[in-house]
Length: 98
Image (cartoon, rainbow, N blue to C red; front, side, top):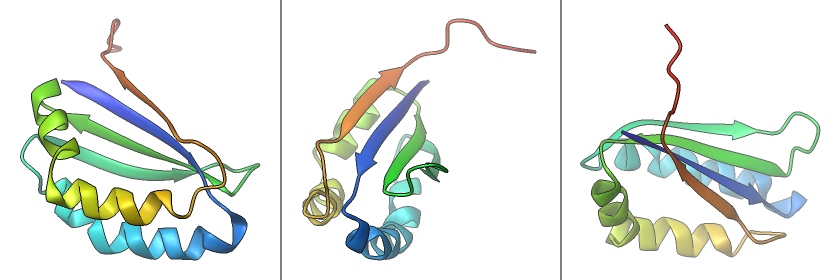
């Protein structure tokens, strides 16, 4: 399993637009083969900054999503709302807590 974290910085006036977009697509993303978990986080101190936090069964499944029509639709609408470049990390746990 891998975890994907994507940091996005939106223009203030586009926050509600992004939240509505995410809300309308979250179940489709969660239903994509290989996606086991998806959350949306908002920074407490800088409300224009959001993170998606997702778990994927394998890198290949994440890549399949990133090359899908669903991703193309979501990303094209999302990136139009950015105030700054997004950042993304794919990580694997090294030490698991009990």
